[in-house]
Length: 185
View 1 (cartoon, rainbow, N blue to C red):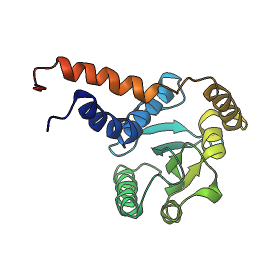
View 2: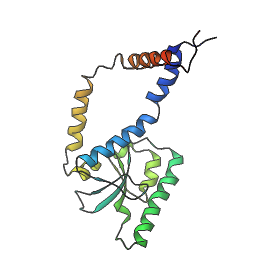
View 3: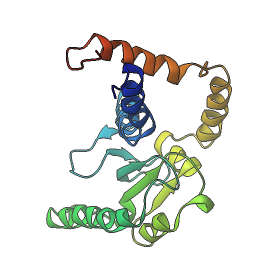
View 4: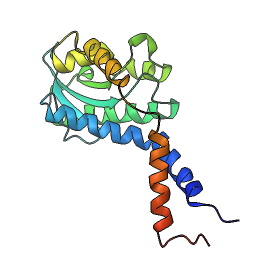
């Protein structure tokens, strides 16, 4: 049985669009946006995504970014705690007056009551700052998050998504059909 180009395209396209790679590319773009807007700098410390001066307590923060309140699982807790401890130990070794509250896990959207038990476990040692509080600390504007969400909601209603998947896998199917990698005869 020969699988047609459209079948191969769907098999390749759906996991790519719906899988974790979209979270990784989103995270990289968010980091870059924070740097380009002058809200943060890329962290030179391995394991940390960004560094910024907290607009509330005026202290330097080293931040690992996550998108939402349920984006980690139980297997992520130990490695994240070890990353933060490693940075804290490095700070002490280098005589940096670093507090545990200077190492944060920044969650881009959601509210504290939505945080999963995995985030709550991390929050026992290192602060998990989410949604309104995170954006306030990053930008200095207490209403920034609410305005951001309202504007995104309005924009999403105007995006034409009806043919997004179909156009994507049809374009890929054309490339597959033209490729020398497959024989459809």
